[in-house]
Length: 122
Image: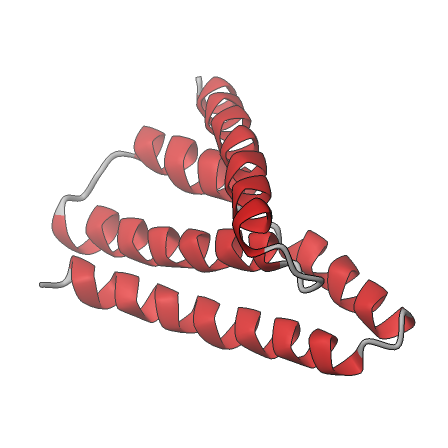
């Protein structure tokens, strides 16, 4: 059952990642991969929120955590893609873009996770 929940969550997370990433890039249209950045920020907030709610407030079951955190958010967030995209920017000599992208992703994703913790504890 756990594998099915993770698989279903993963499928939905991967499809959602693609949609959010492509939709963001269509709106922004820049060399910096803001689509991946947006996915990582949203995913960090959601994981921070869901983790806090499921452990501290609602004591949601293990099945929910497998579906939502491991499956959906595991497939939705794209840190490995972030790493490769940053290195491509560096290889292309776009050092300022690489710095903006890397620093923005890390700072905003950590802030989003903290915000998720904070919102869940209200």
